[in-house]
Image (cartoon, helix red, strand yellow):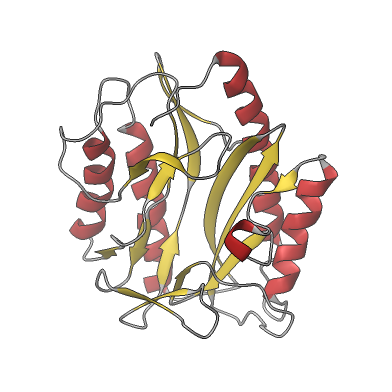
Length: 250
């Protein structure tokens, strides 16, 4: 069941989103060659706690950290480690969320450590643009397929793969609610978007091919089948009568 949010609930989600955004940006700043993925997690965790909020990810399904930190061919769900050092040229995807007064904010960002390749820079740029186009398509009266189609068409026009096994989602008092928000689809098809819906829209775009696999060693990390890099950007968005509003902003 899709849960529509009241204006009061949207205000609480806006605060959860603000905290989640500030935490995410702290994690982005912590991405430096030589630092560990646990350093990134610690930066995220500290900001969330400083606002009296709770990390959405910590303990979720047994996940052991406040942020997913995924490097290069790791698409999502990378587990932070004190032993994993970030290297010059790596691209690092950070995904995190905050719970404020019972409501979640959820967002992700991919950033380069130092100087990276032109190919990785383009991948990140295209993925970020996919998110922008998806949000622009999240208009009241449009359909879920319009969001997915916007992502898929732009990514594939640049020769990239689109992750189809993992999708965006509704969000509110639970981090994952209905509906699912795929990064592919047919414009004009799917559930109609209504004011009060809140969606976590999150393109995951691969440099080559759609395929991904789960690393059985940790039971969490999702990697590209090609072994080539992937990028991930995400915002929590409210559908309003006046159009989409990004809740994960400062």
